[in-house]
Length: 241
Length: 275
Image 1 (spheres, rainbow over the protein chains, first blue to last red):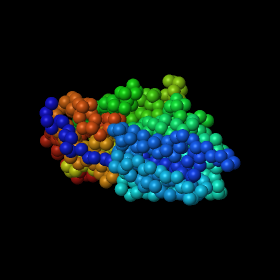
Image 2 (cartoon, chains in turn cyan, red; image 1 turned 45 degrees about the horizontal axis):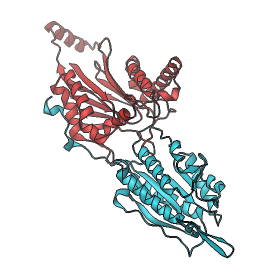
Image 3 (cartoon, helix red, strand yellow; image 1 turned 180 degrees about the vertical axis):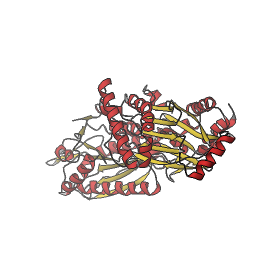
């Protein structure tokens, strides 16, 4: 074949990989220490939930970094919350950053789920605007909410309405995950009108984050019109209704 | 003056489809009417959510150009009306196919892009549903005639089965000359041929592809397209199915006019006789 019938690599345009913005909203309240008080006696679970959570986050980051497409697509932001919510990690390409190590918020008791979710929505909207400004395509954003407790204020009432609206308009994917026996699954359900929240089996954070990274990988390879079904079989390895 | 056309086109299965064992969902059609008055190229990319969408895509590319040619004059005059009527044809065709093949209507969804040319009157009509690109070449410059329609998110677009809107069926018309060319491609091939952020063509590659029919036969260009789609730069940038079609008005022939006809034409002009 004549050389002018062959298109050369050097002449390619380099379109950026469509991004998948993911905000992890993680409970760092004192209950994640695994310390349980029964009157004057104190029991400590081993390992501590917060340590297992950190280990799961590290595995999640490493799994994404090893995926040839997802590493350029997934952008992670992290909000930690107790009585207050704080952005621990701003959106960035996962290949460029190291996983953060979350600390327990021992001095800031409480579980303000609504404040944290509101902050997450704000951050996701800002990121979407940035993509639009520079002409980068992006997938439907993800919000992963993990908590082991019950809200200690009413902020979840407004934020759950806001999130549910986005979910019903297919503009946000929400993954609410309950941890332990103290979690209020009805509150988590109020954030997720399309699918029921899931409960983590024991402290299977690693299995959950492994499943999450596979789901990120599937989405980052999807093409227009393709519906990405959740790996329901995979959920059995870490979660239950 | 008679314009002559050449066209070529081909498609290739993407890696994501071969890994998942799903068929290539891109379909193309190169078509000329039996009286040679109309010609055209059409391309459809079946929706990824359905493993039957290539059936709807094939049906549309087989049937759309004859339908357009039968109504060309009317559609050329009013492309808002054309937009509605073409959409009605698409929906009715897919509904019939859905009944005859017992496939759910929504599972026949595809994008659709076509260029139809009235070669004797030097006119074109293009229409576009969903993503993919229609490029036009004129006076040796390439530009985007119709951009991809994307929803808010990267994996969303409009399909033939979607509810009608002005965004859904985008129709344009214009005139052709001896240096006009068209290049249509699916979203997979667009990854190499279109700068998404700047919304501009990859000038170098699109001009190169459009020049092929100036120098090579249709058969040679068909082979070159499939070779590049299967083994070349397209595989570097996408795992999706890829397809592209080119139509080029490449040569001009002058009809020999006898002395008698020249005198007759001059006489007709003088007396104002309009054929």
